[in-house]
Image (cartoon, rainbow, N blue to C red):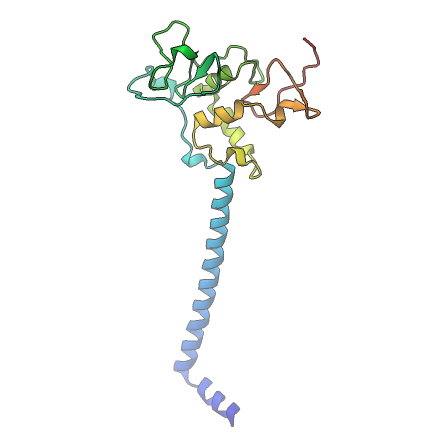
Length: 205
């Protein structure tokens, strides 16, 4: 009897239509949920790696750059005892830092995009010169490659959102700067903004 009742219900076109629409709706919702979860996962991975290039803020283009302009304050590299580099690409003596955090450009020793102590591999002996050199607009193409190589297992880069922050992190010595866990690959140029680690320098002194 029960089977006969079910068969009579299934012959009803209205009920069949409702069942069919419910099935189609279920399938669409399932597909949408799966795509949404994949998008969320991709977003999470992108955030972890810090490689959200579309949101990444680059330094000024030199072709439109006339100097300090209307900059009211600067972030700077902070840590140096003698030198510091600010987020406009200037490097100066620590005593020439203004109250705004910027280097005093009215001092002869303050220089912009200075690559002193840096070699052709993008490795420098002094951290502040590494940061200043790294901020040069002509390093943008190289740094885009660096961003593309950052692994999701590199939490150090997770909060990097602009050119200056990337240079600060990239120029710090890291595991790439050493060999055998204790020796610098090149003790004379251990701060690097380039793609790979510094080449090994076996010359002592």
